[in-house]
Image (tube, one colour):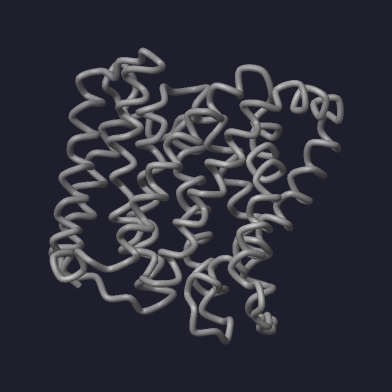
Length: 301
């Protein structure tokens, strides 16, 4: 599927919306993480976003009989909900170890993992140009993962483990979201995506709340104290999720994730101008290779 053939497709607009809002939400989470834990920052995303997810679904389904969901939907939503929480916690912790732009680049391995899992688990064909793009992206990720001295030990660092584990979890989440939405017997992709989102955020709110209560219940007070940035994270997170869920319902996860790499440029601008962080020369080269790989993948059939 060439991107040129899909310029006017709705999934592209939904993906661009999702990528933009995800960058903003992630930056806000990084800022909030200075005051609360990674688990607390993760809970904020779901707790403050849940009312908006339910309201969005209610508006879309007003006067419409809700379709029934089956076991595939339930299992896919439960699994995706857990995996996304795991990935989000690891991502927030990663930002404590590396700067925002480089930390975001670690998770860009998600595009590679999604393509590979798509081939082996869902029989989604990747063209030769697509595999070339994967190799170029991998080279960029290797450069970013090098230690400051330029040795390969960085490939086995804690930040690399966090980033790569998060990318795998995010990839499986994307594939499971699409599976859940497609299992709903309804013609509207927007409503199917909204149902999946509402169910998943409900589950994730409960999961995240239990995690925070078990680890440090006193942090709930801190979250309420920082309700303004928490509300901002919740709103931007839900709008971004609406974009992702709808795009995954309309198009294969590998293509959505590929186009979603435009988030990289937004993350870079936020890192440079807001957090005043300056990646090293080697990190710049690695990130540029990643961008080249994304362009090649967009051009592949």
